[in-house]
Length: 201
Image (cartoon, rainbow, N blue to C red; front, side, top):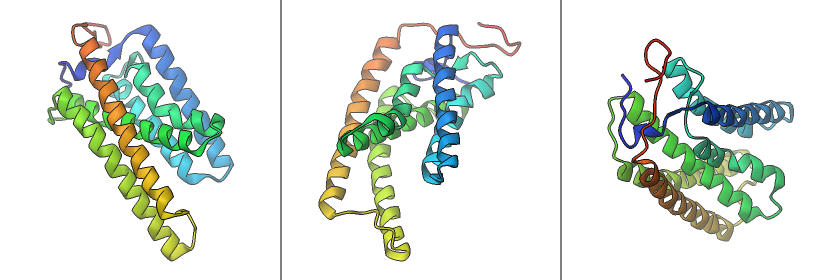
């Protein structure tokens, strides 16, 4: 059974929020299709993961209006926008790790709301920071293995890799601070969720 509380309350049931969230999900699905057509399977997989996580509340509540806040989803979609419009590699890296941070938050919220796992908003923020840094490390090891055995050339230099770790840490901390402020701002707001009959309570 879904739980509420400060962390769980960010799963909204509001028409405008749902409309904006579904627009972002639609954009992500377009990116999936474009990436598949372009043969970019890794990017298609990433975008599919974003869309799947975004749809968990609507599927769980069986109500298309039950969506995460559109601001959080927008942060997760940032690298797709950055990939299309960014002219500097740093911008793309920072946007990508901000997206990872947003995905970590989404996972934390959905674990809290839809599973027996309970998290305070403070722990969720810490989870976001650590998960973002850990993702950068796992991604670096994955590319190193690919370079070693497949001769792919993903890792350009050690200096570039170190800067990537810097940007991932910065993105995790920045996202953690923003999410902390976001939770505190939303704490007094009562958010309605769909009941078992599909109505709103």
